[in-house]
Amino acid sequence: MTGVFLVLKPGLFTTIQDFGRFSCLRYGVPASGAMDQFSLVAANALVGNKPGDACIEMTLIGPELRALSEMQIAIAGAECSPRINEESVPMWRTLKADKGDVVSFGSMQNGCRAYLSVRGGINVPLVLGSRSTYARGGFGGLDGRPLRNGDTVESFYALPLSIEISMPQELVPEFAGEVEARVVLGPQSDMFTEAGVGTFFSSLFKVTFEADRMGYRLDGPQIEHKGRADIVSDALLPGAVQVPKNGKPILLMRDAQTTGGYPKIAVVISPDLSVLGQVKPGCSIRFSRVSLSEAQESSREFFKLLNSLSSMLAENH
Image 1 (cartoon, helix red, strand yellow):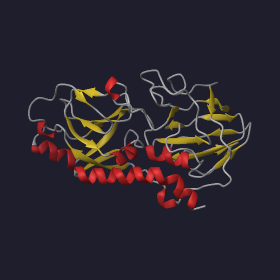
Image 2 (image 1 turned 135 degrees about the vertical axis):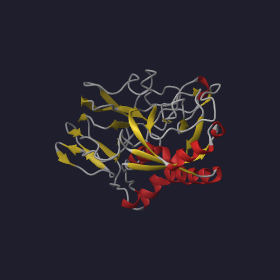
Image 3 (image 1 turned 120 degrees about the vertical axis):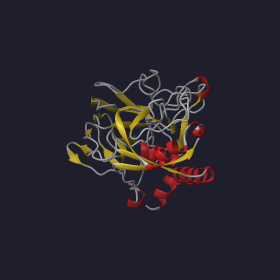
Image 4 (image 1 turned 90 degrees about the horizontal axis):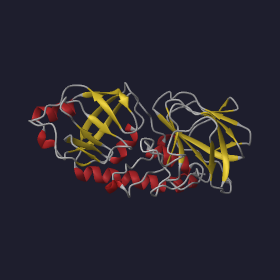
């Protein structure tokens, strides 16, 4: 264990996140974890970490950090103008920071979140099987909250990599102002009229400023219910699209509550939830329908890529 960063400026909402906690949903504890799982895993792969190791998740405006030791780092996700000692450095590759260096970031030029990995992984206590911050609950990460001025971030010790690794350009995602998200219809799609379902799939929905790690309220045409707009509360997971009485969808994200009483018209498939983790307020989302078997196949391919990313990058070097 070693101190790696002193927080000089915390950024807008900077937290420690790993792949999430999925063993406690039945107790009402959200999954949390990285909003963009691909970028988290990529940042870890670039420094030779395990795919789900804890990283620093930066939102909209990045932090300013002083290196407390020599280390290897990588940055993946939205373009965030990273600098070491005011000199621009590239994203999506292994970097070296020396003791005393200042690592800083600008605002996200595209996308919403970026991930800073440290060789060895960020070291904060495991809480219910994960190091992820759940700020609404006040646990996980560093004291259950976003980073503050004066915080010290620690990592596990690991020998440095002998090579520098970079991400092939064809694997670097492009984040745009309009995103298409694939969904499986249901589980309460029968509570909407045929016209309402048609509206859901034919319309663009804008992400409002009521958007955070818990979910995004969307603005667009009203989705028509057949009758009642509530149900006996049942299970929720990240990716569920609820539609309350006003007909405006709510897209649930990584810190989503585990039960809810609004009918769910559809559920976003796992690979596209990472893409949605990069949308900002003002961005637009269009939903497209896929079958359950298509969703399962896409998810298998996505998690296969995540699990093989480290070996793929090492083989390319």
